[in-house]
Amino acid sequence: MDYKNAGVDIEAGYKSVELMKKHVKETMRPEVLGGLGGFAGAFDLSGIKNMEEPVLLSGTDGCGTKVKLAFVMDKHDTIGIDAVAMCVNDIACSGGEPLFFLDYIACGKNYPEKIATIVSGVAEGCKQSECALVGGETAEHPGLMPEDEYDLAGFAVGVVDKKDIINGENIRPGDVLVAMASSGVHSNGFSLVRKVFEMTKESLDTYYDELGKTLGEALIAPTKIYVKALKSIKNSGVTVKGCSHITGGGFYENIPRMLPDGVRAVVKKDSYEVPAIFRLMAKKGDIAEEMMYNTFNMGLGMVLAIAPEEVDRAMEAIKAAGEEPYVVGHIEAGEKGVTLC
Image 1 (cartoon, one colour):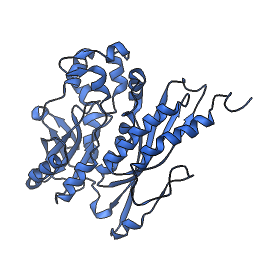
Image 2 (cartoon, one colour):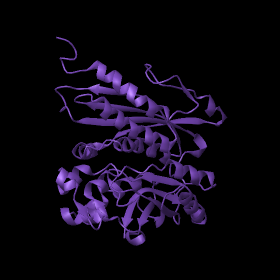
Image 3 (spheres, helix red, strand yellow):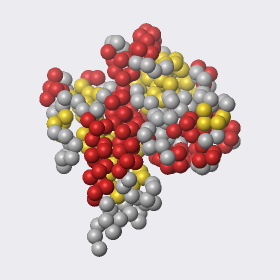
Image 4 (cartoon, helix red, strand yellow):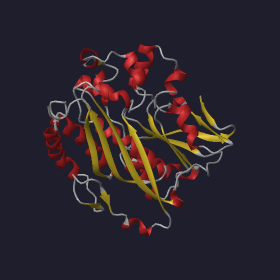
């Protein structure tokens, strides 16, 4: 008896590392010390000495049950973008710059080519957010997970000067809510998605005129990464007073997280067009509107609170970064929370 007969193939692990090295290399920053394969990822922090009071930010998350979609479609090159996005968007929400990322893949069996494909997506997410992929772990769990399944999670570290932290404390009545478009469902709410639509190849390969693509293509679209857009806003001189990443819990849970006591966010539902995938889902699943807004991003991946006089500059900065902005509402005095009207 040996480890391979027990279900863990060490040689496959070595091959996975070799196959993923080219993808990891593309994410390197000058601060990264050493290469892939050490016991710890090393990152030189001397560059942050110019900050008055550097504060480290961290975020960890996964892709939830969206991975089930990747299994059925046998498409594994974008799920890694989702894992990175869920972490770095939260760091950017606080005004931070993501510095480095580590991934964790648990699988029933290590298929080196599949693992390398997953990591290629992780590397792409790191490139989009300009952070380095400094390490990770691939763990085989024979007997615990089916051989053809895996789970993916990650962890990011970023930095911000304390004076630049976005914490919502200066949000005032009259401030404007500016939002950035999502790419679709992103990585939240897939447990409900999987109740509405059958997760079969036939179902996911079905073309819908209203979507302009197959159901699978619409659902697996990777989560938008907003790091460059938020950096563009900052570089334009605009102050983001509050920032909310619309993830699990939708509008009702996430928007209030950026608000101080005594103010309320008012979102105009007709201020932008809700993407077709959400309208289709609500119709097919007979899901109440309130539940849709309490579960999904409904087409808005990030919502910002900005002073009225800075809205035009913020909109231009967002467009310059390649994202689609909308003015979706305002802040008023009242009990902390959000009103959709």
